[in-house]
Amino acid sequence: MMMKKILILLSFLMVCIFLQAQEVQKVKMSELLTLIRESNHPLIVNFWATFCGPCVEEIPYFQEAVKKYENSGTELLLVSLDLPGFFPDKIRTFARKRNFNASLYWLDETDADYFCPMIDSAWSGVMPATLLIDNKTGYRRFFEEQIPRDTIEAEIRRLAVHH
View 1 (cartoon, rainbow, N blue to C red):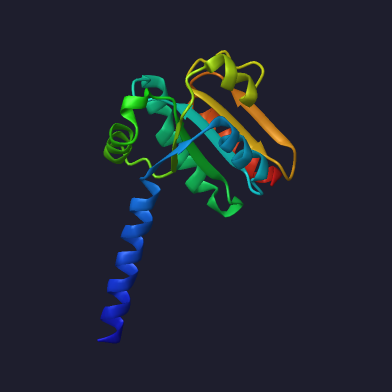
View 2: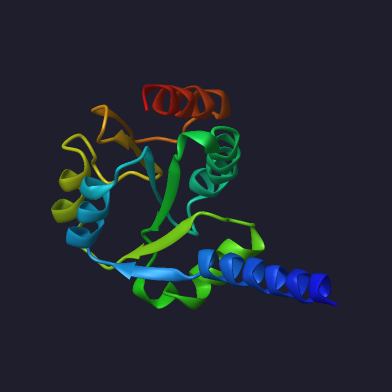
């Protein structure tokens, strides 16, 4: 009987963790920059949108590579640049249907000329865009394009190894 209760409790906790991972948090650029700056583990910040085919195509590759190197503590943040009307329901539904299991954020900013250079001076606003960073080691790479699957794996391996 005790084992059954433990299994039920563990199942409930797993469902709660899954549902929490699927919540979309609203974030301002200043808050996102604080998350990035204060991170003490390898971090991948992927800027995407539901209407961006290349964005949606590469996200599973990021998830796959992060899982492969999970011992490094690498975390994937998916930052949606969708229109305000998409937050939170359309983004959450879209992410659930595609089994996105990373931390989900919606950037509550509309001026790309303001927020893009805060991530990288070379970012023109094109999506997808991805920042790979490890504050402990100083590792930093920025991509303003869809990244091929093998390059994603190689970059995350470098990020994880440097950690």
